Image 1: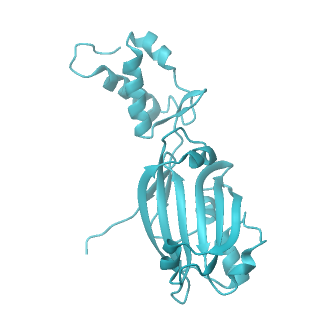
Image 2 (image 1 turned 180 degrees about the vertical axis):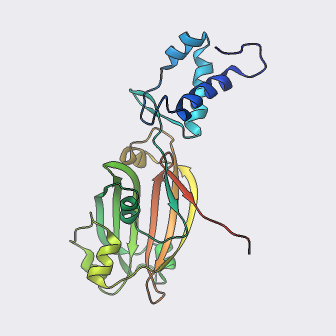
Image 3 (image 1 turned 90 degrees about the vertical axis):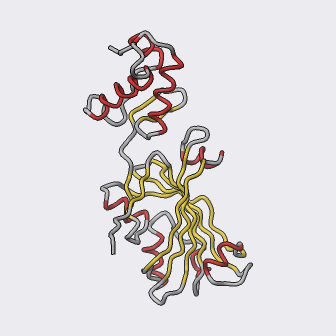
Length: 241
């Protein structure tokens, strides 16, 4: 039962009720939780109060709404370490998941200014741009766009890019990723990103921009990626020097 004396806001009590069910394992990941109407009838409260409580839980990443289906307990987020350079496929294999990709486009085009600066080449010099939808156990998690420039890069056209791109570069082109510089920022998904990643309208996403260098210290890839904000957490271990 809820305490309606006014000491603690009703919506906060509903939030804690749901949180306790999730943390206790009563409602495991993927569980369809009661509807707004169910909560209203159970606690004798307004739908607006329930909506506020669930909305904050969505913002905190504990539950997710699926249009036409209801509200579900969110799946555990994937944690990606920022101090280790690895590709998406390697990350998913390490988590016991099957990586996959859908090739959205591959083309030989003049470099846009941001890619040219990162790759240290002249604007409009030709590069290969590969855009892929990255999957884990069939679930779309990210959209990756790789801008690539190295000797023989045009040989990427027509290759199978569903497998690991970094493995292909190592095995077929002798390009070995050794270090990278990466930026991360929070944003909102575009309409196209919502469709590809199966997100609700105005869903939060994490955007990364990464420049990757080969064993000779030369930049060969400028990658822009969009990750589902409800499924990813980036973390780094920091120490005081």
